[in-house]
Image (cartoon, rainbow, N blue to C red):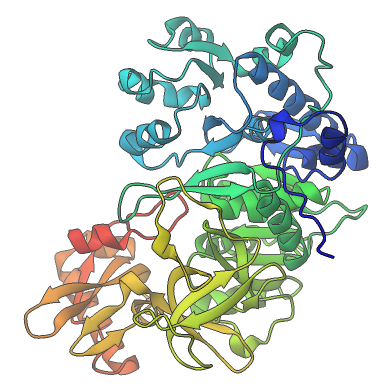
Length: 554
C-alpha cells in the first residue's frame, strides 16, 4: 500500500474533523509565544528603551492584535507590513500577524523612500504597522500606496495622529491593542489564540533584501521553515531552557533574517530575554550587554569589538558571557586574539547564512578547532551543502573551488518575482564561492559577483581585505575590481583610515604608500592592491554588509 499525503491546500475552508485534525498538528510561528507563555509566564521576554513585556503579556497582546486586524478585514495569506526599528511592538505585531495566518511583510528600513514604497507596492497590504518617524517619509508617496487602508502607528504623539494620513486611517498602537475588542469580530475570545488551520508551507514572512545590486527581492519563508530554523539555531548557539535565563542584546535590525530567525525567535522559544536596541551605538551596545548580563553577544564583528572595548574601558570582564557569535564579515586576526584573550570563558564562533536559506546554515560550534577559525564551519542540523561548478553546474570534489549550494527545510518558498535560475539541479544556489575541505568544512573565498579578475587570475577580495585590515592605521576596508585596460580589473582597496589621516593630505600619502608596501610584503603579485582610496565611511546595507556595487560605481 501507499500511505496517504496529508497536505492542506486551502486551510481557510476546513471544517469539522479536517479542521480539528489540522489544528492538532499545526506548525505555526504564531504558536511560539503561546507555548512560551505557558512555560515561562511572568518571566521577562522583551526589553526596549520604553519598557518590557513578560511572556504572558507578549502572548496576550499578540492575540489581541491578531483578532483586531481580522476585524479590519485582513484575510489569511494576505500581507501585513511592518516598518519600524527594533522595539517590543515590532514583535507583538509580528506574532499577531502570523497567528491570524497573514504574511508578515518586514520591510528593510535603511533603503530610503524608494525601497520602502517599492516593497509596499509589491505586496499591497491593507494594513501596515509603521513607526511614527516613518510616517513623514511615506506621506509624500501616499498616492502610490493608497491600497493601505489602516496604519497602526508605533510611538505616535497626538500631533502625529491628528495630522492624519491622506489615504489611510491612523490608529495608535497601544490604543489599538487596548481597544482590540472594538475592532475584532463579535463573540471572539479576544486574548485567546485564533482557532484556524495553517498549512506547513504557508508564508509566514516576506523579508526584503537590501537591494545592493538591484531592486530589493521579496523572499517568502514558510511557517515550517521559521520553526525548524529557530530550533536549529537554538541548538547551534547553545540557547537552552533553564532556570538561569539566557539573555542577549540585539542591535541588528529585526527586519534582517539573522536578527529575527537566528536570534530573537530561538531566544523566545527557549525562554530567553531579548534586549532590543533601535540602532547600533558602540557605547550603548557595550553598556547594555554589561547591565543586562547578556549570556550571548551576537552580531557583526564591529559589535563584538564594542563589547571588548567597553569591557576594557570599565574593567569588567563580563563573566556572564557564555558565547560570542558573529557573521556577515570576517573577523581580523587582531580582533580574534583580543576577544579570546579578554573573554576566555566565552566560546567564539562564526555563523553564516542567507535570507533565501533561513540562517544559520553553516556554522562553527563551541570548542571548534581553532586552526579552522577563519572557515565558516560545517552544515547545521537542518541544512545540507555541496559545491557546484558555476559554469557547468556539476558537483565538485573536496578542495575544488566553486559555488556553494544548499538544500533542506531552511530554503525559502521563492521570490515574489520568481527567479527560477536560483533553483537548479535540486539545490538553491547561493552565489558564495569556496570549497569543502576533507572534513566538510566550508572555506569561503568570495561572493561570485565580488571576485576580481586581474591579469587572468581570480582574486579573492576577502583575502586581500584580511591583509589590509591588519595594517595598524586601517579601521575598515573593502576591496573591489576597477576596470583596467591592461589587467582587466585593477585590485583596489577602499579604506577607512584612522581619523587623523583624512585631515592631512601629507599623512594620506604616507599611509597610502605604507598600506601598499604592507600588501606587497604579505600578498603575491596578482592579489596586492594597485590603488588605495580613502573614505570617511563605507556604504552598508541594513544588515551591515558593505555595498561593493556602490564602491565600484563611484
